[in-house]
Image 1 (cartoon, helix red, strand yellow):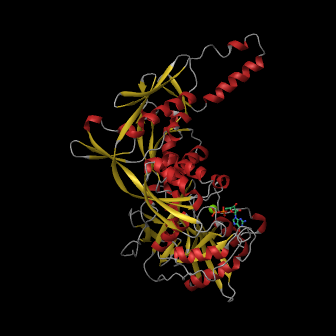
Image 2 (cartoon, rainbow, N blue to C red):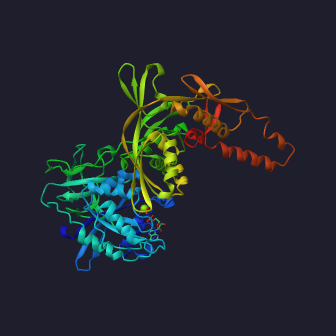
Image 3 (cartoon, rainbow, N blue to C red):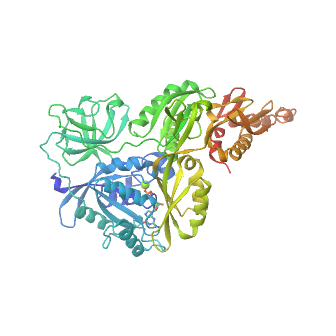
Length: 598
Ligand code: GDP
Ligand code: MG
């Protein structure tokens, strides 16, 4: 097909504004998916996505659309996640497109990730097509939202489509706007091949499947290709598109989005963001890849069954294949044995990776509390990146410690501004700015330590604003602070996996809170267990777990056997997620205890 009739676009929005629902309607109206195969949020194919109702992995589909002008078009629609943790995925999708449909909820208006996504789209020089969704809601205010789009984002929104993705109202307006406003691709079909790898996955039979956007030239089955970053060369065995089922083709043409297989067994050869070119007639330069994202949050992941260590490495490697922002390296913990220190973009990302490992790879995990990366300056003039509190140098050798700070924008209805400021203050934030979005809503800007955000900032923000505030942040740099490592001792022994870095002004209450919390979480055992918090060897808090007074089975003696069985069953249940740390059995929740305290 002539490139003039191709449109490549993404749908971007704040979470829950209706991207996936709109994608569903578009699949229906273009008859890409037959009615009987249609299920809600069809592109969210991972179980986890369906359960949580969020989009995690992007997905690209090809659709055919006959426009009102009578011409036939091919659309490549790339669905994107909207959560702040998955910005990386969004920027990858956008690099493969010429346009973005921006969905804004008619009742909620512009929110934090609406803006964040708009900036990403502008960075990629995309044409943005605003769409106001959920106009069926009684609380919808399309005119107010239209004005917001013009004032806050600066986009022309006078005749932007007003739709209900849920009811299928005015969906055609969106497609017409795409035809009219999104530029067609303009690659040179005769130029040497340049194709951007924007995603990949591993298939047990075919090896790596790479998702590509052909920017220049084309790819045919049988071609010899080269990955420009790694230099690896392969012969193309299959190419195709998804609609969303896989459809094989003979070639992918200039301007198209599709997939290819080349019997690639080494997952390291295929880097997301790399450019594929022809081995026989290579391009001079690779395409501009996209911004590498550095992990913001780290935690240790340990298999509960230590025999699964290698399986865990495999699982992490496979997940990393299409999630370049996931990082990991081997680490050992005295308490937990062999495992991996893993880096994530944020807490939701961390959660999703853990859950995928448990579900898709069947490995039960112990995860340690998340930590940010500290810059530790030692007296010899060096600086170390410390992402695992237990690796902190000896206190005598430390000159000072810096922690990462973020600039947070919190968009909220006016009435919650007071509560938000109180929360930010408690989280060691510095007030920066307050901007009116419209008469009823504000954007409150704070600088906050990232270390406080990974604690329970999201939950607290949600509860103090009844869920009405939205939140976005970006790293702005490092600041020196009074920080110390706090150790936790169980039965007199330091448990490295429980160490945390705390601000000294908050150390006492935090130490006390964590001891109390652990006391509740660690079950009683045959002996008394002291729990202590210590800074630089000095005990700052303590709580004791009393020993079990008598054998729990004793009271069943002479009693009914089934009751005894039940009791044992119950004990076993409780044991599932335990790890023996020295002589103490510690449940998974205990390692996360530092996260939720107050
Ligand atoms: P995403 O996070 O942007 O992908 O949002 P989803 O498509 O998953 O939609 C979030 C929620 O909004 C779901 O419960 C949808 O059913 C609902 N929703 C989406 N579009 C509409 C709409 O036009 N009207 C109404 N009332 N609800 C909608
Ligand atoms: Mg979605």
